[in-house]
Image (cartoon, helix red, strand yellow):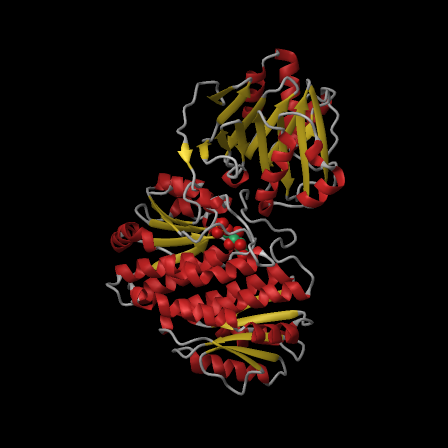
Length: 590
Ligand code: F6R
C-alpha cells in the first residue's frame, strides 16, 4: 500500500523551486523520501533523498536543479524499503525518461521479468520503476511518444497515476483509479495528484478521469484516452481556501485543527440545508441504509447507525469499507449507501461505491473535499466545510461529519434532536474542553509510561471509545484499544492489572450505572482509572468533566479530550503529531 504525491510542471518559471513548494504542500500524504527530476538542454537531472522535503532540500539543494520543466514526488512506502534508490523519480536505462508514480502496479513483477529479459537494468525495488522502462522500450522502438504513453498505461494493472518527463521536454501524465489533476496558470501547466499541490499558483483545474492521458508538448496541452481518442474535460475553479494552509501561531496543524472545532461545529452543514433535506427524504424511503467509511470515518458511521435507529426508528448497518467491498454485491438493490470520508479519495470507500452503483444503490457522501472522486461519484454529496485538515489524524473532520449526520437524522425525525438550538451551547462546551489543558497534561503525565491503554464505553459511546483509542495509538504509538464496557468480563478483564490504564466514558445517561459498575471491577484489579463524564466519582483517579449538553450530543464532546490526550502524549514521546510514522493522510490505494 502506498500513498504518494506526484507533481509535474512545464512553464516559464524555474521548475525545481516551484516543485519543492508544491511537494511541501502535499507532504501530509506521504513523507518518507522525496525527489525531483528536471529537463534542461535535452538532459534529465534527478536528485532524491530520504526524509522530509525540507530536510532533503537543505541537504541536497533540490531547488537548484536547472530547467523550466520538471517532476517531483514524496513517497510513503511499503513496497521496497525507505532508501534513496527507492525514492522517485525513477529513470529509464538510457536516462532520457524520468517517472513519478502514485498507486500500486499489481502486475509489476511479471512486467519486470519481461523487461529484464529484454536487457533492462533495474536500480530500485519498487513497482514504479517498470513504468520508466516500459516507456523507454516502446518509445525507442516506435519513436512515437504519445503511443508509448498509451501502450504503457494499458499494460499496467492496479490503481495508478504517473507523470513522465522526457528529455525532449515533453511531460505526460496518465491515471487509472488514482487522482490526477491539471492546473492551468498564467505561466504554465501543473499536473498533480492533489489540487493542494498547485493551488498556491492557480485555482484553474482540470480533473482527469480514469483512462485519461495528458501530454504537455511545446506550449500545447493535449488530452487523450488510453486508446488515443481525444478527450475534453471541463476547467473547474477550485476554492482558494485550500491553498492557504498555514499553522498560524500553533506548534502543529493537529492542535490548530483541534482548536478549530470551536467554529467548525457551528458551521458544519449550515450552508448545506437543501442537501440535508434531500438526504433525509432519501433515507426515509430507503428499504435499507448502510453507513460506511474507514478508520475515524467508520467510527462516525457507527454513531450514525445508533442515531438513526434511536431517533429515526430505521434499521441500518455500519460496515467498514475495507470489509464492505466484499459484501456489497449482495445488498438489497435499492439500498442507500452513506459513504463518509474526509478526503473523498480513500480507495476502500471508493471501491464500495463503485461496486454498489451497478447494484442500483443510491450513493450519499459526506466529504471535506467537494471536488474529490467520492463526491463526483455520488448522487448527493454533502460538504463538511471544515477547511483543510492537514494533520494526519482526523480531528475536526470527525466532529464535522458527525454534526452533519446529527443534522440529517434530526431533519428525518422531525427535530427530536434539536441540533440547531444547541449549536452555540456545543460551541462553548468544545471551548471549555479545549481550555482544560492542565487536566489533560496531568493525565498525559500519569499515563506516559503505561504500555497498554483501554478505552471503555457502552452504546453510542462505544464508537467514541474506538475513536479515542485510535487517536492515542496513531499519535503516541502507545497500544490502545476501544472495548465495549459490557464485554470486559467476557475476556478483556484478563488483561487488566496495576500496570494498565483505563479511560472510561461514563456520561450521565442510561449507560451510567452499568459503566460505573465496570469501573469498580477494574479498580479492584489496581489499574489507573480515568473517568470522562458529567458526574465525578471516587472510583476514578482522574476525571474529565464534560460540560452539560443534551445526552444525545455527548459523542461530539467526548472525543475532544482524547484528541488532546493523544496530541500531548505524542509530544511527551517526542513524536511529530502531524506526521505519525507509517501513516498518510489519504489512503488512495487498498
Ligand atoms: C485516523 C485517520 C484515518 C482516516 C481514514 C479514512 O485519525 O485519519 O483513520 O479516518 O484513513 O480517511 P477518509 O476520511 O479521508 O476517508
